[in-house]
Image (cartoon, rainbow, N blue to C red; front, side, top):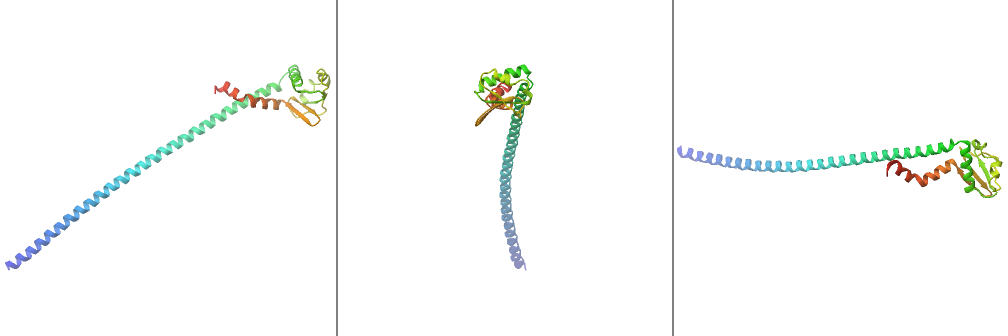
Length: 190
C-alpha cells in the first residue's frame, strides 16, 4: 500500500502544487488588474479634478466679468443721470429767468434767427415780455403770433412753409448734443 499511497500522495502533492501555482498566478494577475484599475482610476480622478478646477476657474472668471460689466453699466447709468440733471438744472435756470433776462435772451434769439416778415410765437409765460412793440424794435417786420406755443419759454418763428423751433427744450437738447462730451469731461475727468 505504501506504493499506492506514495502515488496518491504524489498526485495530491502535484495537484496541491499546481493549485498553489494557479492561485499564485491568479493572485498576481488579480493584483495587476487591481493596480491597473487603481492607476486608471487615479488618472481619471486627476482628469476629473483638472476639469472641475478649469470649470470653477472659468465660472469665477465669468461671474467676475459679469459683475464688472454690471458695475460699469451701473456707473454709466449714474453718470448719465447726473449729466441729465445738469441739463435739467440749466433748463430750469432758463425757465426761471427774470423778465429783464428773458427780454435780453429772447432778443438775442430774434436777432440771430428771425428773418424779415416772420411770425413770432411765444409761450404764455412770456406774453408780458414779448409784445408787438418789443418785436417792432428789431426792424424786421415781425408779427406777434396770436396762439401761444406749448413750451416753458423760447420762441417759434413761422413763415410760409416752415417754422423754426427755438424753444427752451429745443435749445437745451441741441446744446446737449454738442456739449455732452465736454460736460462729462468736466464732471468726471473722462
